[in-house]
Length: 193
Image (cartoon, rainbow, N blue to C red; front, side):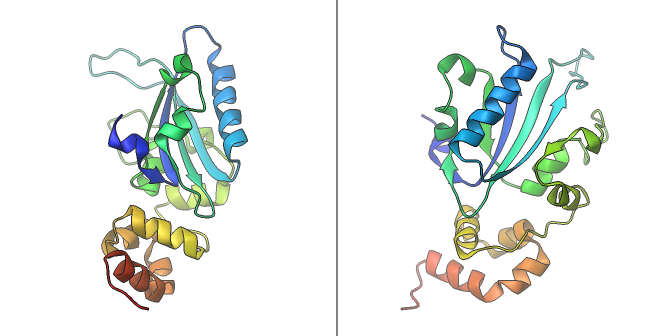
């Protein structure tokens, strides 16, 4: 099994392809409901890409792009999410760890790539419209962070302060700098006991 399937994270990027024997919208709803049954405490951003063009000029098969961000420091594995589904359904799911939440959400409408079809921001389905607007406008400020979330973010970003700054934004980095510094020093092996 690939290492990435076993690495824990709070944020995931998913591409959902159409199954051959199911209605695509029903399949999408089934997927979302299964995730909610597993853990309903997450921010959710999705869009149907039905106008993407292949390099040869042909229309790509419609597919959903989904970004999920679990809250309150909850972390899980790609493999755990995949295992919520039967084998035939797993073949329609591509999942990876989300390295940059802002970039992943902006990609939903190809905001930073004018060569690709430009989708309307109104087509994004979300349960957190305020954060969606922040992300699309390039504002990386996250909501108030609890200590578990800060520890998870620092660990996910390998205690690299510049990556943490990029991920949580300058205001949050300044706000939590002393705690981030402590977490990073302990994470790298220093002791503060």
